[in-house]
Length: 110
Length: 110
Length: 110
Image (cartoon, rainbow over all chains, first blue to last red; front, side, top):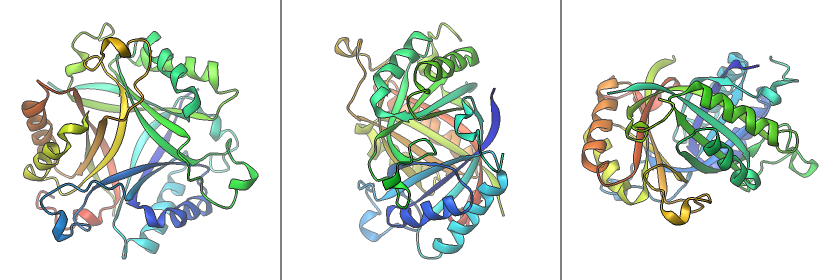
């Protein structure tokens, strides 16, 4: 019953979550998971942060599971095109094996 | 010292976390990590949510690392059997390489 | 534009996050993401926890994406050497495909 799928992960600023969510839906993602995140990247190093860690959770980690690699790439491309010139972010993809693919039953991309 | 293991991830409603935790232990998982999560899936779309994102973190993302694929499958099967008719959820598995397998030392399934 | 990279994940006690962050930077990591986490492992089972789940999020899940497996291993080794005798923790590595490697542009290890 298991099947291979792609997990696409977008870590970016919380501010743009509504826009990212819209892109996910428009590109064919059928759901996503959001987790509050903090951290430090090259692009959001401000002088005051250089010696310490960033405590505030002003980022989000958004995950989308999709059986379509095309959907995953479309989401990554659109998020980058719309936001990554102005906002900090990284997008990566992982292979996953969905054990309970309930949500994929009517996936038009499946 | 590294060894390959399975990471099983269960994203579901916070409400059933205690039951999920019991299943993990009963099935031979020796630990788990829980993160608060929000998001949107096909099954928890209520009319009021359709245009916006869901802000409240009413879901959990539970991760179990196990050296036994049988344990991973047993956890996935039991969680689905007990809860996924009534609660929203997805379960997937990933390959990981445990670099510091301290917690696996006495794993009966190893 | 995609390229393969390593994601190293350290799940440990929140208390030592500042030290872990310093190790990441010293070892050549160019950014990291932190998520608050709870859970249960063999090493942090106290008598009061044995029957219930641990609700408080006193752990952190730290992720580092790096194009250098050497950097990943160095981070894992140093964190374990400095902390895992006294603090609960696990470190694992996953293969990821970075779709938008903006943050890697000036990665000295790339």
